[in-house]
Image 1 (cartoon, rainbow, N blue to C red):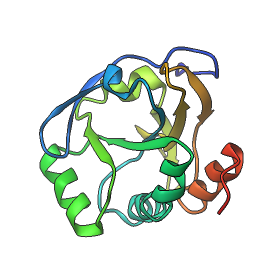
Image 2: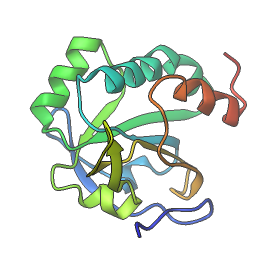
Image 3: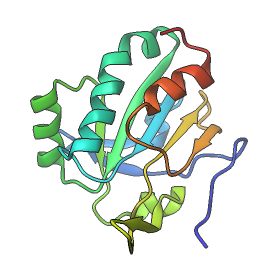
Image 4: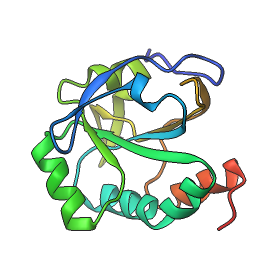
Length: 157
C-alpha cells in the first residue's frame, strides 16, 4: 500500500531540476504557501488542461499568497517546451526516477482504459510557509481541479 500524506505532516524533502535545469529544493519554497501538484506528462491533453487552469488562476492564487509548482517525470527540456508552448507562468520540476513521487505517495497502481498499470496518481498538496501539508488531494481529475482547490482555500473566482 502506498504511503499517503495527511494534513499536519511535514512535506518530504526534495531537490529537483526545474524547466531551466536549475535545482529547486523544498527549503527554497519555505516562507510562502505552495500548491504542489503532480501530473503524469507534459503536453498531454489532461495535463495541459490542468496546467492552463493553474496559469489562468495564477493572479488570484498569488494574490492569496500561494505559489504553484508542478512536478512530473518529464526531463527539464520537455518542461521548458511545455512552459513555452502554453505560456505557463509557474515552476515545473523534473522527477524522472519518480523518487519524489514515491515520497509523496503519488506513484502506484491505477486504472488506465480498464487495465491496471503503475504510474502517476494525479495529486495536489497545499503546503504552508513551513512546508507542512495543510491539504492532500489524491487521484484528482484534471478538469475542474483548480476551481475545487480555489473553493477549498476560500479564494474568490
